[in-house]
Length: 288
Image (cartoon, rainbow, N blue to C red; front, top):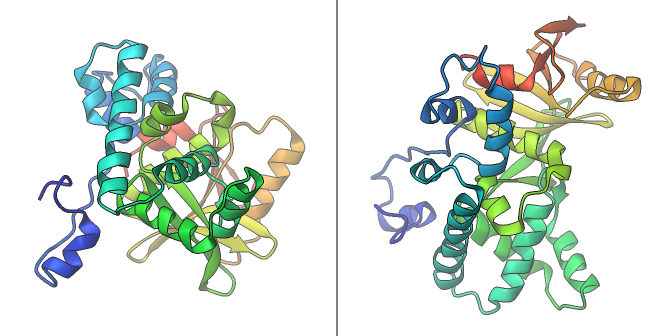
């Protein structure tokens, strides 16, 4: 069925037990390269420019139907975002205060890759001299998630082997929609890179959680059947302090599942204590 008439969250009520969900994600970076006609992207010197473009415009296939003009693509992304927000969220959920919902959406989009709670959103509204309860914030987050604008990622205690109920992270369903809504901000590069890796892992069929190992946080714990991997994402390892922080988090994990540190540093695969340091774009272009 079309998303214009039925959201997947409503299937359980209408056709219980008679459907199979096949999730479809925005284009991954390697798929984006195919759409762009980039040959041998693993070795193509243009791949850096293509990745910058991918960070800005995201992975909606529709952008490839337009001329490669920033103003045109930005207008398309803005129109899609506004349409989803109005039709799939405001009208469908009968939101009484669309302006407040828009503020919540902006707040979540603006803090991509950060831990978000409903209380934090309510406190933010209070700081803006606006009234919003925690329950309202919870509902707004659920509405945005049901419309696939955001994806909630729970936290997982690696040592205790249990899922934690507080302090989730939210990643964008598509980065292009975020930029169509907020405008492009390359100062958020750390969160943007995390979002790209999150989309890649989901598209590869992994279930994804944030890892907690003692006092350290692991960006992603990804599991697919019996396979499990840990991934830490950073922009650049420019300082020794950053190197130690990122490696120490992975080294604190008390098991032998594969561990990756993905950065934009111009490296090929290197190894430290079993942890593979790999260029992030190389990882995205590798076979799943």
